Image (cartoon, rainbow, N blue to C red; front, side, top):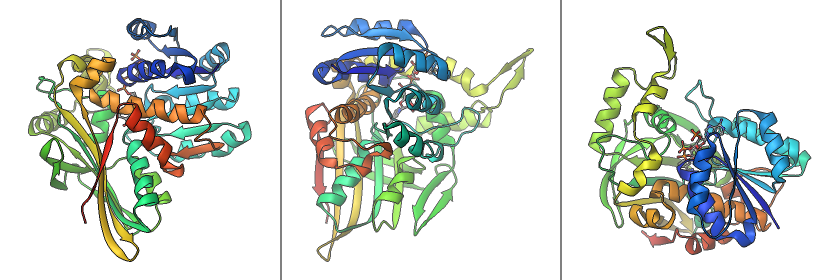
Length: 393
Ligand code: NDP
């Protein structure tokens, strides 16, 4: 029987735990570990079909991680803590010879910059240890990479442009809240935009480029160009690519709040002196904002995330749109989480399932688009994230 270790008991961790339990024939004995054990216990108590073992762990400590992985004799570690913990968890997997999966690329807590460099640098160590690391198995990155690989495999001889289009039209009723970890979310959104064209990265001011996209089942929405991590691996792996961009929708209220918070310094990640104490403004803001996990019961509306790819097939121009629509309330009904956590947690479970089944298995550190997209696309349909394809031209 397999043994599965999930690290991180936040919004995404809850979905992963529920979904692994629904596929217990593959995941076997499931342990959920996080900094705060009571959060693991809460999630475990919601799952009636199998018993989930719960532990506390500080995932910044390689020693603690190694001891935990050895103790539960894990076959795979699903990392759904924060991007800050990616490297320590990867190193603990190397030390113990256990496969690794995450949903977001490494970020240093003191620098709002994310890139694959340090994770890719562990490729050789993973090979030497005879283990696999699957990076970015969430929705975006994750499913969006698989959509690109699927488009390349079945629809194009060459893909020339890709636009990744991420819409969350959910309404939680608060004037301002973030749908996943506020620190990670606000750091991403307030950073400069960046896209890739003709072999180089082009930087924009934050929110400088805007377009309106008509999202099926949602409607037209303002969509802003952001840098997003899956582009870094897709430019390496999609042949013939000339341009790739990423757009995300934001409402007026969200952007106005964010601008005000930024203007008064609340998005700062450097400590400031406050009445004899050092505080990090962004961390304090996180304390004030609603816990993303608490948004589940109040969020209504849908998400629609997809890719538009243009290129050539048999000498003809072609343009397709692959997308997935999720409903916040339905997600909550199923696993007690809103759609942003759901659409991240389900692909994390699917990636881990394919690894345990050895359907997707290659030693070393890999991104999603390096594997045959077909089994993953089939699982999406079976596990709660059905997708659609439209031929636009
Ligand atoms: P949350 O903040 O809700 O949960 C993170 C969890 O990790 C918390 O339970 C937290 O513990 C735990 N944690 C943090 N630091 C440590 C530590 N040092 N040791 C042990 N546990 C720790 O985040 P989400 O669930 O929303 O996000 C989880 C991951 O998913 C993030 O990496 C995020 O970037 C990624 N993500 C990826 C997406 C994608 O599509 N690819 C989309 C959305 C998110 P505590 O409760 O004690 O604070």
